[in-house]
Image (cartoon, rainbow, N blue to C red; front, side, top):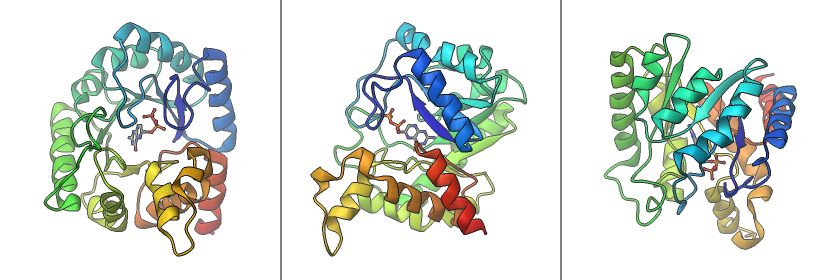
Length: 258
Ligand code: HH2
């Protein structure tokens, strides 16, 4: 799954694809690089981000979804039912909802439309304040199985689960979820995971034996960690990885797959 953020403020590619032409061109590039799905989002959910008004989110994403959906599967990354509905009308067939609540919209659209239930603690404005869990892996699993079950009960046939790396999680929480990904895989729901360019990758480099300063590891410098964790996740049984650097990730996955 290749990412296009049609936003001014996403943490790694904010501002680059706010222009529709640039976003659509990027989508074609990602398809050429080997993406099977393009995830289009119009609202940043980075820690501390403020929400975006409905009209503005619609204006950002609908033309991009309409232009790309004849060429590839498009997923819509949104927390708003009206945006999900408009994106489906424009050709999207996967609702990627970081609040795990829009399954009714996917269900109403019929069997061609799937749903991703992602785990987030709180909301983007406050989620990194002081995230705490009894047992992060068990808590996330329980939440996802419950939401995915609700989506199935509502009539969605294709339901994915995603632990929401970085969404109300410390580096230790992210690592526990990656290390124990088998716990999510064993639920039977297909697992999607997104580590791409996330902050904890820079923190791990800063904490290594021969540290690289976290400040010098900007989000564009997290490629190796993004690829390593994507391949790790696939080896553990994740069925889809959400990445910005599609070409490099596809190449790495093909090498490991032999
Ligand atoms: N991560 C981000 C956004 N959407 N969706 C799923 N299913 N899983 C994720 O891990 C996930 C997601 C955050 O990354 P990005 O889109 O690059 O940044 P921003 O939220 O700042 O637009």
